[in-house]
Length: 256
Image 1 (tube, helix red, strand yellow):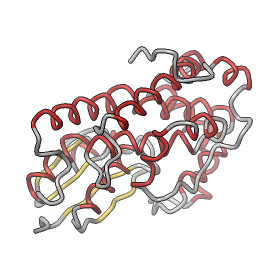
Image 2: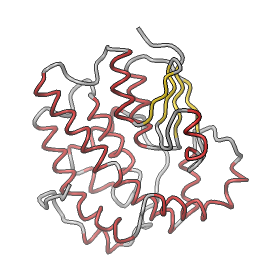
Image 3: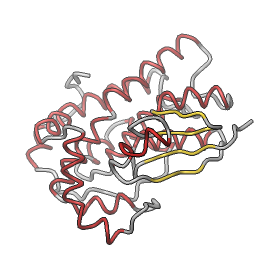
Image 4: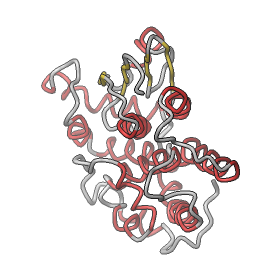
């Protein structure tokens, strides 16, 4: 049976927020989504949901922060369908892969997006489509270049780190492909790791320069657990040399 009153605090097109939204819908849990301005979670998060990052949640008065803690709590409150398999060995593997998706993969689209926004701050605006932000677009638009710089600083997004992410991406996609082949990911019903990793793949696919690389991999199928992205970073935003520097196949080992 679904739990009681539930509020989910999100940032526009945040991939961990998308993972939690998908989990809530999978479990049939009704919720109110509260859309926040970028960086405003630092100011209001401690009061509203007990932290300084999103996703944040209040459910029956309880405050939770982070996609993994929220999904563990959801399984306790709404057991069916489960986000973790019953088999102990498979459950352990899913938890390990979910952790990798959170701690290693999650930062990759964030950093590449942030350096893209530094090159074209106006691209940020389309990523707010479908969100009910507390200020009108006309007010937010002049601040986009500053917002892009603040976000890049917050996530330590530099050209060097983004280029390293792109070079490592084929190997990381290959690793995901292997988990799918082993049955850890990609089942008919998504588990927590599917949602964690699929949300990052979906956001990476919004970067049009990277889309051909992603579509070569079985990992791309994990995006089926989410609505299609409507926002995109136009092709040509990233330097062409960055894409040429990436390995052609996933044979190159990823460092994490």
